Length: 554
Image (cartoon, rainbow, N blue to C red; front, side, top):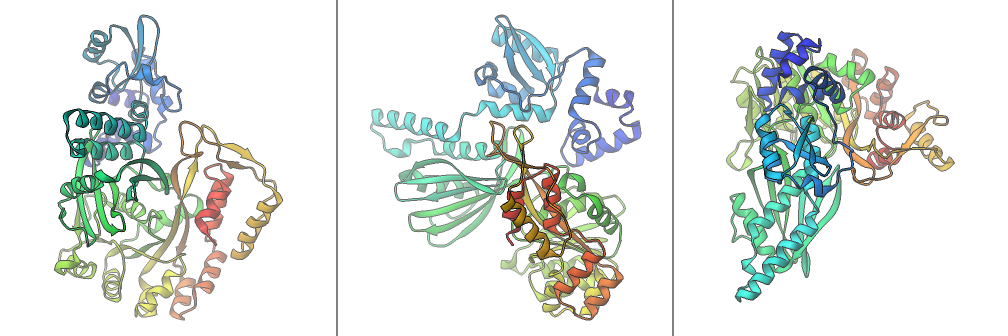
């Protein structure tokens, strides 16, 4: 299937635009199809229409489509992954299959011979394919129980001990399910009689499975071996990392162990090897904030700060900005702890304080590497702040993060780090404060009529921030829950306040005004606060009021 011909023929892209996008796709280890869809160049349905018109092959989306798992499993999972094909319906003699390349005659003949059915091929996008792959999974709870029960019986028959259990297989399943469910973290927590496996999905922890406590030492040892950690050290915390391939996708896991009462707890952070193709719109930056940020990243000198607590999406925002700045004309160097995404053409350095390679030392060395843009994972101390500010004032664009609750508080925080107020004033371009809220599932969300109590809570939030807004009369939505989501939510999006350091704000910084007065002036100049952005996204049906209030916590 010639996607290039399709896109150019239908005036979606010019040939030069296609070539440029193809180069970007190679750098991100992505596909042209994924690029045009994630960048909103074309919708999945429209692409399907083009395929149908050009080749006479029908198209279908498997996202939010109810499919009998028994039909899916007519094609073995290994075959489905290797050939990117999924069965979704059947008659007595025909099997309907979705294919990312429905003109692949060899695969059609292979499926026909292997299943005994005639094959009706439909075009599906890669996104639709990976969504459909989830139907091969039952639940990790059931699968782990089956593995343990089956092998325990065999071990008993053979007179062997519990170490006959396939520990490698159990660990692989825990990792595989976490990746397929879109988890950001895996928590393995030993208790008195069993160990609990929990996944953090869209920022919320969910119990997934348990296994007998007697095999926990073997499980933790397997993960330590993968992470190159000491398997005989149980008294001290350890940190490590390993990489594996799951369903043709490279995934890194950052591992932390911690001694606890019933054994070591383990937390594994999932890090996709290649950064997903994000843009400002997909992050949730909109309206005035979008224009402010777009204008800010065009500047060649100064500093852009991203603030917020751990897990608020700061790294993703920084990587997105870097991807927009990453052109052949500039040299980019980063100091990170850890390196979460691999970025082409970017010199990424993993800091290591144990050998003296701190953020400050990395920054100091960068200045001898002739960079145009520098990204420092976090400003943690006075020394790092001082070098970052000096780099920004001497002709570099510096990006970094800081732990403050809102945008305005970043300014007194820097001054508290003994940075002169006139230096802060002359180097800061923009401060981004953010949180992540869960997105409502479009398949099951329902319109909500606010009760008087909720209206009162929202008005209080607005009044507290000095925002003159009316809540009554606006439509909002609530989560319901269905088979395609987690309790009515699916994915996350950012809510932001973006403070542009204008001449007026610069004057306040030099005068060492407090954060309250700086925020008030920024509001007068049009800055949108996080609570305001959150409630606006709730009005748009992107998230719920309850979710915004849960995350803001004020």
